[in-house]
Structures are given as structure tokens and as C-alpha cells.
Image (tube, rainbow, N blue to C red; front, side, top):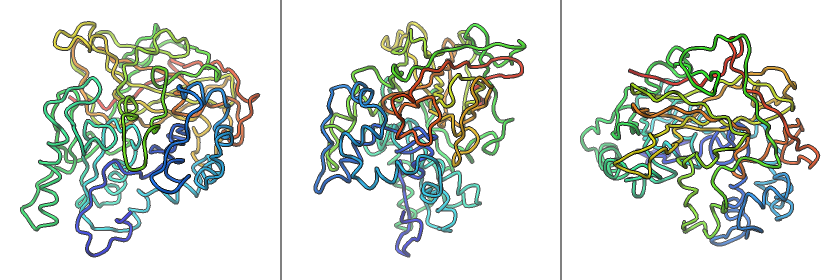
Length: 465
């Protein structure tokens, strides 16, 4: 915020995991799907004076609690949250209208013309603010202001950069990556810009390689060409028999169906699921961040056997596949409903046995995942109903990757329609405002993911040699 109208005394800035666009992909929404579990944080921050505490849950398992109560609007009413101004304003603006666009700091930063040297820093698995730093940097780069803006993407969760960065979930890194960042990037940056020391000689972009376990330095990001350039990516197609291939489908028709039932949503973590902010105050952060702090690297085998999760895999890789940039989910699908969500997970599947670390045997590590609300497939600001039983396209960017799928591993893609209770349930019936959906609006829908020559589905991977 200080960069919007910087004081002359502001000589350098280091936003770490900043909230930049809370509707597109930071705290409150991801592509229109609302993040239910942030309500406890809002209540803690705005519902009382002093340190603040989270409203006690009615159940040990937030999955049960939020499922029983109905819509997010019903939950807010039952718990008195509709009295909080933030809740009132947010529920009045479910789409990406002027209210949210006017708060998008990447756009405001471009308009501000700040010349303050800025080191944008973000975790590759930031469970809260995945969007901010990299999109602010991309917007400033597009405006021709890369010279005084740098980007760092580390192997961290939210604000782990300030603590111990030696591991995250199943990953054990080559040393303490947070200390490496502070020693090799942050301090030299401050020495140059605050004390007039020698040039820090930072690369424009520094991204941790989560496959080779090292820091990589780049002149730009994404590396192959400008963002949105299709030729920079390689489509990994969904194929018959739940396989994946870089070869496009040749069949004249084909698809895989599943039934999405709002009464039985797919959990985002193994149950029971606690409120991530329970037991916390606005001053202290306790054990509630576990496993919330590592959910983005949770072993995805916990959804094995669910018929509402489609799973596609490559054969065992005989050559490494390096990805570097921004994957893009490109889905063609039909639904019997008139609304619906799509969750896409890009996963690295470890070999069945890993002698150096047996706990990794068969582990399914999400490298990148996100959710997209189908009503926004044509416009984020003007939602429209999905025409039932008609093929539609849903194309959206996934979070950044700098990873190597090693020989002996597999690449997996999972597709589903719920990620509960982190994200609110889509009733799968088009209603003006999902926050206030009625019980009768929540209906089962049969989703068919298409994989034919005419209607292909793929994840576009930023593959590099």
C-alpha cells in the first residue's frame, strides 16, 4: 500500500506474500469460488476489540459444520457474522465487479508510477495468498517497469520465508531456503538501497527449482515467452483409458463422466478438518496452521476411490520432464446442471518405492492446483448460466511451477468439482448470488470431461529442455 503514493523516505520495499487481488486468487476468492475457512479470520480481525478470537465451532469437523448449515450466507446468519461490514460488503459483491476491480493493487500500482525498488517475494505453495506478488510483478513488467522490480518465488507456504525454510510437507530441501533467501537476496538488496552498499546483483527473477532442489536465476518470467503465448507451452492431453499424452486425441468423440453431489463434496484435506484459525489470536499463531500450512502439498491418495474425482496418468517417465512457468487448465466439458466448479490438480507421482525416503513411496504431490467457478467462463464481472448438456470451455491459469518430473515418476492430473469446506459449494443450479442459495438449489449434476478430436481437454505445461 505504501507504494501507491510513496513517501520520499521510502527507499526500498519487500512485499512478502502480499494480498493484491483478493477475488482472483488471494485470501477471499479463487476465480470466483469463495474461501469459507477465511470467515474465522475475518471474525477474529473485525468482530471484537483487542487481540480477537475465532467464534467457537459447532463441530470438531468444519466439513460437518458447514455442510449441515447450508449456504455460506446461512452460516454467516447462524453465527452472527452478517453483522460484520466486511461480510455484508463481500456477500453483496460475489462477482468481479467495480468493487473488487477497484481494490486490485496490481492495477493501482501500474497507475501509481512508483519508482521505489521492490523485491516481490512469494511462496510457491502459499495456502493463503497465492496470487499477489507474482501478478503485481507481471503487471509492472508489462508496463515497462521491470528495471526496479524483482521477483522471488521460494519453496514455502504463507510467510514461511520469515522462519525455517528447510522443509515443507514431504519435501526436505538442500539447506534452509529461507535463510538462503535472507542472506543472499534480502540483505544485499537492503544493503544496496538503504545503505548505499555495492550492487546486490540480483537476477530479475529467482525461483526455487523444486525438482532439482536449487535456486534458479532468470532474466524474465515465464521464461519461454511472454505470458499467454501458447507456443511456449505443450498441451498434455487427457486420453482414453484415463491416460495422459502429449499426442492429441484422434477419436471423433469421447469423454469421462462423474456425478458431482453437493451433499457429498470432496474434502480438501483428510477429515476431520479443523478451523485453521481456531486457537489463534491476531497476535499469536499457534499449531492451528498444521496441516493448514501444508495442505497444498498433501498426498492426494486420500481421495482414492472417490467416483467424483477423475484421475489421469502418464506411463512411468523414461525421461525427465521440466516445467518452468505458468500451467494452464484447458477443459471442455458438459454438465446436466446450469452452474458448476472445476478443480484441476497437476501432480507428481513418486515411484512405489523410494529407498532414500520410504515415506515418499507412491506419494502424490500437487505441484499446482486451483479452482474455477464455471459461471465466469466468459466474464468474471458478468456471470452467465451454463447451458445444460452443451460443450463449454473453461480455461484458467494454475499457480507457478519450476519443477522436474523425474524418470521413474508419473505425471497425474485430477479433475473434480468441489474442494470443501475450504471453498463454498456451488449449487450447480444457476442462482443470482451463491452466498444465498436455497436448499432446493443444491442438486446433483453429471459432469462429462470431453477428450475427443473436436473437444479436447488438456493441461498446457510450460515444458523446457
